[in-house]
Amino acid sequence: MALVPFDDRDGHIWWDGALIPWREAQLHVLSHGLHYASAVFEGERSYNGNIFRLRDHTDRLINSARLLGFEIPYTADQVDAACKDVLAANGLTDAYVRPIAWRGSEQLAVSAQLTKIHLAIATWAWPKYFAASEGVRLTMATWKRPSPETAPTAAKAAGLYMIGTLSKHEAEACGYEDALMLDWRGQVAETTGANIFFVINGELHTPTPDCFLDGITRRSVMALARRRQMIVIERPIMPEEIGQATEAFLAGTAAEVTPIREIDELSFTPGQITQALQKDYDALVRMTPDEVAKIAA
Ligand SMILES: Cc1ncc(COP(=O)(O)O)c(C=O)c1O
Image (cartoon, rainbow, N blue to C red; front, side):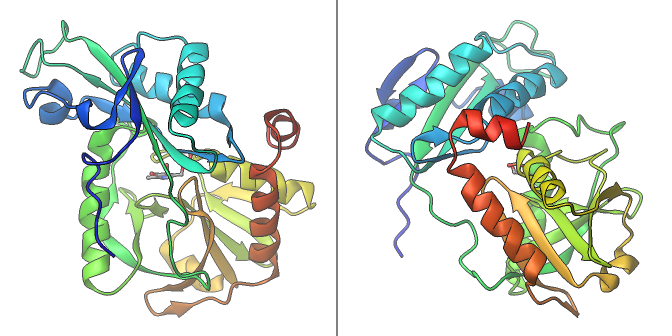
């Protein structure tokens, strides 16, 4: 399939308060965000015209910026409205939505106190993240998620994706769909763009998100599992324990709920629990925001 470059598409992008033609959304090369990774972003999905858990994403965006030491110059209400506007302006109802905030080009040095903070929001149709519906194959990454003393790990910050891209490229080069990353202690963390769950003795186990993203999908899946009376356990998980799992799956805005077929030499068969939560999640994302709030608050 031919690649359509992201800078050469039709449509509109919301940029610092206005909708502008897609191809005009150009950034100066001497932007602080580009050189020093002073950028935070979100990944959201709209289903039937509703952006799933929009306010949670907006709150995380604003908080990510604060963790990087800057304040997005729009309120959460304004950011929510802008996300909806850009979706409508592009005539999309089922799409991915990508807000990004970054430091501008007023200063280009480590110190950047006087830079202007920008916000842009784009949207595009984006069906499934993983093509393999029967499950994905993962390999262990060589890079480790850093400790919260080393990086602002709770932020969805551009700089934290540097090791994600390296890990994903390494995995793809070996024929895998993605990489499973451990953290600096050697505990299981997440993949390069999603959280991970294991079914062990019929219970749902997932790593405690103390140095990686506490995904909004992850939290939704935990709520759905509890509604099914399942036991959900957040805890440190060592890689040696993965072999005890009978099922494993990924959870993320892009990945949604995706079964895992293999992690290196270990194989899993997507079973009843994964399928039930996949079904519940598919139903949840298509509910109205009020219904979602009641189920996955
Ligand atoms: C590194 C990483 N972990 C986890 C997630 C899952 O987060 P969410 O469910 O909020 O999309 C994502 C996706 O945004 C991610 O990029």
